[in-house]
Image 1 (tube, one colour):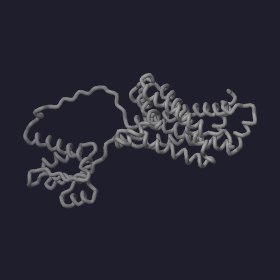
Image 2: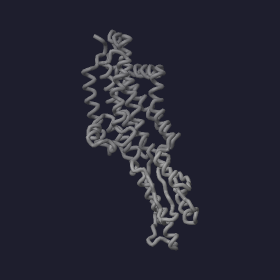
Image 3: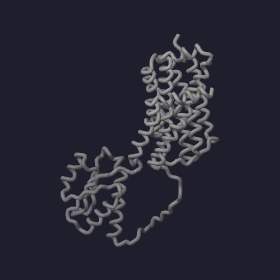
Image 4: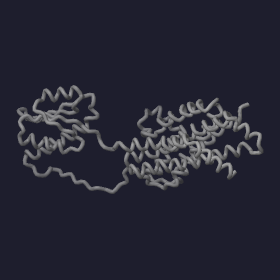
Length: 352
């Protein structure tokens, strides 16, 4: 068994193309998402119409320019500024008081939700200017803030466990399906039947080798995310690898089931992608499941990838121990049993 396991590891290592995609496919995602600052708020383009350049107008313009997410441009002509708003080149137009004595704000009503925060900021700047004009040096009800050291996480911290789950799932399903189908096509499996070697030992060695690869794959993804893009894992890293290995049993079973039905490696690849890609997007790899419609959410939470991602994030973000993941582990165990039964019924070691 030991020699079979070592041989299976060598076979995986020699398959450079499969090994490359096993490592690089999720790493590419980790790198691309890491290059974007997805936690920074959107930039709001604001045109400020200040016709007279009075002291009040100068104070308001300075206050608006001090807002981090505002990109402020000054204008003397309200009509041209509103034309840019209509054309979509500006998102807010702030007309400062010249004769009317009122600050007017124009915004695209189709983007009312997006501009709600921006309008609140403009209102705060105007309120501060009103207090200064009234000669009030301090707000009537001062706001005192007290910072508290709390655990915070970025979107990338949420994404990184999702990429780990996506990577091991994708390669387990498509990789195992393609490999076993290729073995059958090359008559390797039929030749093994003519030897004293029990087929189950050969398959067990293949599974063991791919479980080892799943740990290496998860380690590479985590290393890229943590070292290059400062992703954080608050929990015990060991539990992440345990979850990856356990869940991978279900995904490898799916790969065996696909290999039992696919006539050739190309068909196995297509069938594997047809199974893996919907789970990739529906199980919450990139976005929380709460953003899905309630009907779809109630369905996709039963997919095998969903409890894995939930468990990985509880460990990585919440610092949970594996002993507190009974629900997720139970769902994964059920999927291991279900996929094993499906694979055992559909898989054939060699063509009849």
